[in-house]
Length: 92
Image (cartoon, rainbow, N blue to C red):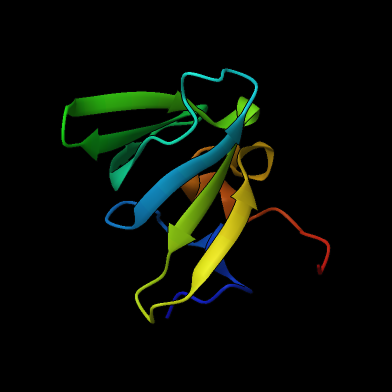
């Protein structure tokens, strides 16, 4: 089960996401369902089409299946999903 404590270790595809901060101001406000995740990018399906968001310059709000919102810095997510399980993270 995905929780705010273990979201780093899970696949993000299917979660609803919002870009809340970014070095690129044109990315802020993009929201929709995550349809693909690569090493350095997340693809979000919006009402206007698919947008590809670089992870390392963005901060995301993710809606977890239990209804909880979690804020996550994209820099933490920069890695292939299958490789993130091997990483160690500091407790927040």
